[in-house]
Amino acid sequence: MTSPQQFLLPDVGEGLTEAEILAWSVRPGDVVEVNQIIVEVETAKAAVELPSPYAGVVSALHAEVGDLLPVGKPLITIDTGVPGEAAGGEPDGGPVQQQDSEQAALLVGYGPQGTGAGRRRRRPAHHAQSQRADSVEVSVPEPAAARPAAKPPVRKLAKDLGVDLTTVAPTGPGNTITREDVHEAARGATPQAAPAPSPHASQTSRASETRIPIRGVRKHTAAAMVASAFTAPHVTEFITVDVTATMRLRELVAGRREFRDLRVTPLLFFARAFMIALAKTPEANSSWDEAAQEIVLKHYVNLGVAAATDRGLVVPNIKGADRMSLLELTQALADLTATARAGRTSPQDMTGGTVTLTNVGVFGVDTGTPILNPGEAAILAVGAVRRMPWVVRDDDGNERIEPRWGTQLALSFDHRLMDGRQGSELLANTAQILQEPGLAML
Image 1 (cartoon, rainbow, N blue to C red):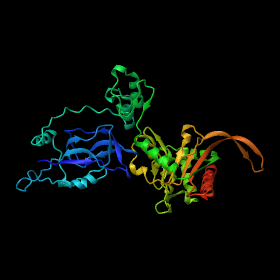
Image 2 (image 1 turned 90 degrees about the horizontal axis):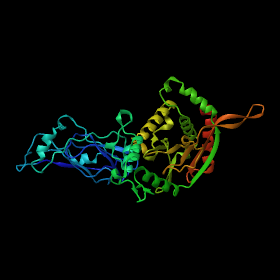
Image 3 (image 1 turned 180 degrees about the vertical axis):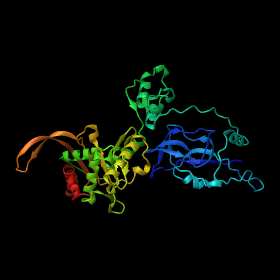
Image 4 (image 1 turned 30 degrees about the vertical axis):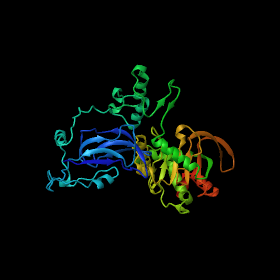
């Protein structure tokens, strides 16, 4: 007889309780190998592709696209085809030994690695079907249609709008479906041809409202912000700073050979100045341990960078940002941004942050009052960098007004961990470095 193995939905982050099924890559009857991607799920922190911990034939999928599945519940059943014990106590098949099912099930998103003879060879689908036919009646499915090429955020948009992606003509690179394609398909749909209501959005009879279930990143962000706002006593301070010298430095750096293939943005220098200023205010890189009644000073900086994506606000962090050179920090920021926009931020990159930087200036906003990430003591908001009139004083004390590059910074901090003096020093030191980058050499 054969041995069906259930793969339970693992906790792909730290303490996550559920995940939404975004897309299946297999269906019943398909032959899969160890570490083959079988499903894409969206947790409260990231979209994650899960590989199979077993080799065999898919016999059942236990959730449909759009379902919310609790961690630990069956995700998929795979018929491994491993022989069981015959009546005489001897195996009734070949020499392949069954891998320990408990060990495989405990793997978090990764299947066991094959080691030579212990790894199963891929079997033709018809052979797998004939093995199962002895104990269960199996209907062989028709060949699967090609899955439309679209990123997870585009698939979610299509579900929310009730658009069948198989009917959408792709216009993106590599024949991928874009958000514009989905919106165009939604506008062109007639009431008679409208698909069934999406499980992700419900509308009133007169289409005067749209209700979207609170799930995934939005649900996690809302809970975190409420917890932070009502746990940490927030204080926010502001400063307007002349960053003309920093903008000149940016032009010089962007022209250097090692930076030519990288996008050198003002945010890079704000992040670098923030890291340098933190060294003089270690209280800003700490956390409050309520249970132990202790303040935990961190001797490393994992810089969180808030990123607005199609899935909502995510805050991945750069591990050890304080120890990076300017070039390393440039590369890390570029990788973080590209991964977040593609919806591929890993759960590991979403945890362990110590301080956060948020760039509200990218939306043309001058400043704001950012809310702390739970467990962190400080968050710095950077406003739009724009030309503004500035009073300049020469060596003789004479004043004149001239156009300069200026911006506003806003620092929110936890008043349990930092007094007003420490928060003011951190903000002022960051501003001074941006006004005179040479101060970083002191």
